[in-house]
Length: 120
Image (cartoon, rainbow, N blue to C red; front, side, top):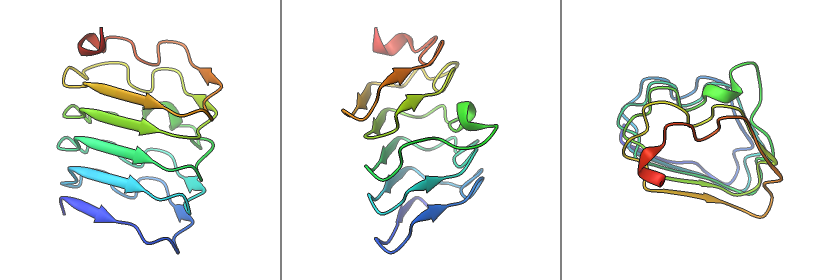
């Protein structure tokens, strides 16, 4: 599975839903209001992710490592998550070219983009 099209009828994506899949891109529609913890952990081929306006918070104990080992990430769009968790994109994200934060973002956590040298 390289890409997924999530229907507008989907409102929740439970934790660990896409762990270690072959996803290369994913668009979370505005209809999704809940994105569980660790959803994309170890999706090493994931290059682009867009999180729609419905998600206003990353949930759970693992919210700050939702993209753990997603080392191919190039483009990230986060529209309405109010708080970007600590260490969200900290670590080995050397391919990261673009991070777009929408107007819903109110707080960026400690070391959220630590070591994202390609963003400098």
